[in-house]
Amino acid sequence: MKKSIVILGATGTVGSKISAILLKEGHQVALMARHTEKLEQFRRMGAEIIAGDITDVNALTSVFRNADSAFVILPDNVKAENTRAYQRQVTGTLVEAIEKSGIKYIVNMSSLGSHMHEGNGIMGGTGEQEVRLNQLDGVNVLHLRSAYFMENFLRTIGLVKTMGFNGTAADGDYPIPMVATQDVAKVAAGHLTRLGFTGKLIRSVMGPRDYTYKEFTSIIGKAIGKPDLQYVQIPADQAKQAFLSNGFSEDFADNLVEMGTAIKTGFMNYQKRDDSATTPTTAEDFVREVYLPIYNK
Image (cartoon, rainbow, N blue to C red; front, top):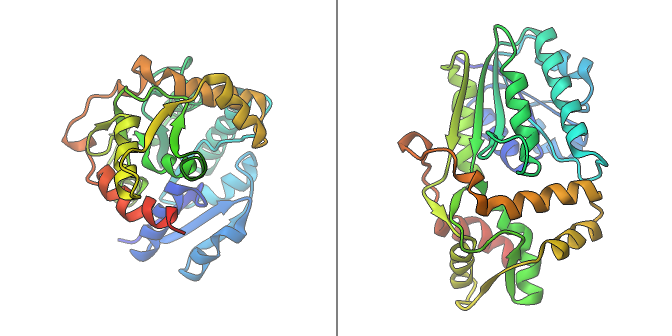
């Protein structure tokens, strides 16, 4: 049976892929975003496109009403002067809109490490959002705790090209689960359509195995013809300055740096891997199919 489904964050790496999957399956899909021009491809596929802000409770209530399920996400706000306050505002709006609309099934985009509410940067906000969504009565909520996105390596292509090395503020020797967003999207789309979950649940999506940043960088190097490509852990103060130079607020930059430097504490490795949490796309697959075409543009 075809479903009526709402997708928030449809311009993002996961939301866009969920939207494409659902539309190809013939579901009735409503996409809400501030910048709807990025969603025209989905309009042509049959999606309903709604212009609105995630902090607008009336707009959210309206789009949730009569929907079978919704995919919700806590978006980044790189300009936020107080990141946690912004996150709490968004979460509060989502909770109010869910209650007012009567929607019964929510798939919440969360992250590994969201069991902690501090010391993990922006993930502290996703952890708090899980707790607040869990307080909803009569609403079934599935928290998708995703591993580190392989797509994050696309952000450092410029560094690889101009400086000849790859780098972030994270420890290069500490292995963590990494996942391709296409795999996250497939899991999310399945739950949004089957509606086979009840109560409040956590589903981990952890990729095929754990990788270190150095190992992933080595895989990239081999693919781009630079087998000696090195990973460099960038000092926290330098990483922060790079974020500030890109127009990020100081508080948001601090949250990003904290998230990266805290990886070696193991906060991303809390969830236990099993068959249900393991997804198929390997680092080699991702680099060949996604990274390399973008690198070669």
